[in-house]
Image (cartoon, rainbow over all chains, first blue to last red; front, side):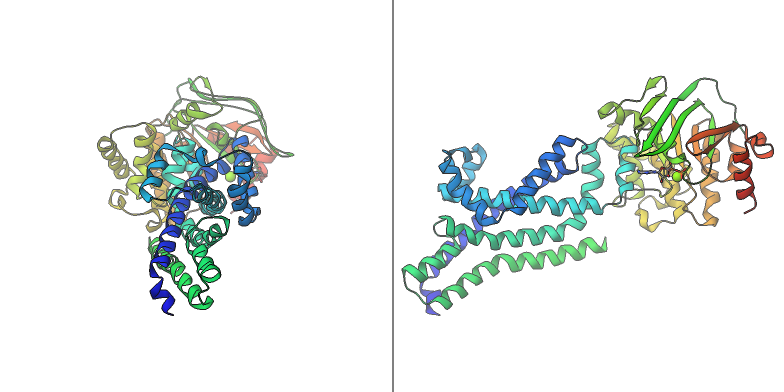
Amino acid sequence: MNVLVDRFDVFAGGFWLTLQICILAGIGALLIGTIMAVLRISPVAPLRAVGTAYVTVFRNVPLTVVLFFSAFGLPALGSNARFLDVPGLNVVFSRLGTDLPYFRFAVLGLCLYTGAFVCEALRSGVNAVAPGQAEAARAIGLTFTQSLRYVILPQAWKSAVVPLGSVIIAMIKNSALAGFFGVVGDLSQTADSLVSADGLPLIPVFIGISIGYLIMTVPLGILLDRVERRVATR
Amino acid sequence: MTTTSSGQPLIVMDRVNKHFGSLHVLRDVDLTVDRGEVVVVIGPSGSGKSTLCRSINRLEPIDSGEIRFDGQPLPAEGRALARLRSEVGMVFQSFNLFAHRTVLENVMLGPVKVRKEKPAAVRERALALLERVGIANQADKYPAQLSGGQQQRAAIARALAMQPKAMLFDEPTSALDPEMVGEVLDVMTSLAADGMTMIVVTHEMGFARHAANRVVFMADGQLVEQAPPAEFFTNPRSDRAKDFLSKILTH
Ligand SMILES: Nc1ncnc2c1ncn2[C@@H]1O[C@H](COP(=O)(O)OP(=O)(O)O)[C@@H](O)[C@H]1O
Ligand SMILES: [Mg+2]
């Protein structure tokens, strides 16, 4: 078990990179998922179709394929990480000190994939709100977006928060795949290189890696339980 | 008690038709409601009373014919439709108060968000309305903490807060325990006496008799018969109305 102590810096580095991927992809997935959920419930048929198409694609294609495509497919199609040079994001990336093309591609792939599940969690929350609520909102003259904002989403949130948490936890675990698509130095790739390149014993390394993931997921699970209880009592 | 109507049409339905799939729920409906008039709609379950009500603020779009409110055809969608809806109050059988907001917040939401009125002024008006419907002391409670009768009175206050030109009531007392029906009907009767234009779907014959100007009898999507309440209840002309009345009056 000395590996954990001797190579603590390597583990910590891997943890930090994975945490970065997860925070960025998590924020992105929540944004994309919310937009797609609004599209899917909008009264405009073509918008609904866009949302449905998005969810159908990204929910049904394996994450491996999505990551493969964003890491190797996009560059092969002549795209580089430049298209991800969104002004605000650049500041974030340079602050993080991590800005490799693969890192951006991994975040993008994870975002798109997780966004589909965020969308469905939100939509199931919206469906759980009694239909009379939306009718009453429309009847007093609220527009579609106003009734979402002031009436539907605040209530949908209550039944969506727990499934959303599960989606994010699944995303953290899914981020492990990113290491196999060239994100150098995240937790899963760290494990791989410590074992196969440095010849370190397999079991301690993987215990260390598991601890890394648990540090991210367990507190989130506990937080979720708390939120669930608070939401239920109101 | 019955106030006279003004003779100026506020709601006009002109040969309105509506289908749900193959089901023809509104058949060539012609109905004119004058300013200040109170019209009670009765008829068997499934005859299209709710659909009629809901078509007036376009919660249900119609297939053909025309509906005009205050001289204007109903807008098809968007902000214009939202504005129209804000001028027509609607009260539902199942109350539909916003579950995550207090009674006071329910009443204030429309004026503040739709009309962009100042919250302080709206608050005063909302409290006065809650006073009027007799639940001022419940202002800070959530809907689930109120009795059915109190919830329905809160829903009436919420609709009135928009200062609507007309009010639609779709079986407002049908979901209530019998002892709470009276308190809601009292509020509606006082509204009628104040000259509010109202369309009320109800089987409360007492309310129809002393608060309505006119009773409209509906069956199978058609307006079969209309008459002042005294005339309709004592001397219905159509067989369907006679049959219907004999069923509900013997209960
Ligand atoms: N959204 C809907 N979709 C399909 N059928 C409906 C819908 N709403 C009402 N209907 C049908 O239309 C008919 C009239 O309904 P409704 O207007 O609710 O009648 P009432 O209020 O007089 O009981 C009924 O047969 C009902 O089943
Ligand atoms: Mg009905």
